[in-house]
Image 1 (spheres, helix red, strand yellow):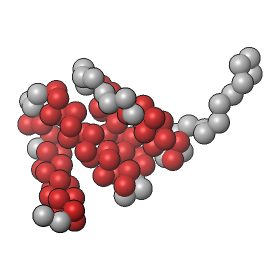
Image 2 (cartoon, helix red, strand yellow):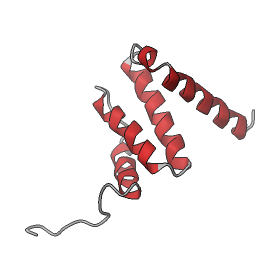
Image 3 (cartoon, rainbow, N blue to C red):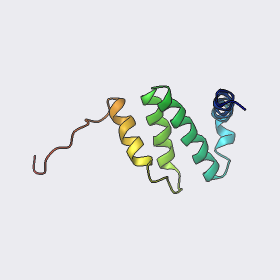
Image 4 (spheres, rainbow, N blue to C red):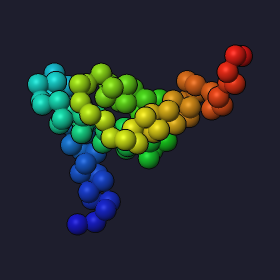
Length: 93
């Protein structure tokens, strides 16, 4: 199978899960997390940063263990969406 087919098929599955959102909430938390993480990755790849942030925010609301790199990508998506500044403020300022 080609990478393009797998990407489109994964996108189709995510769309189906998103359309049937009430049913998706009945899925086990781990599967909900996988669906949201896949959606966020696709949104990041497409440069749709604000939608990626929305998916990631939903993901933080689930009671599950997040991948180690999640918070880095969440912060990067928030910065690219214009929700936070990319620089750190020195202490005391």
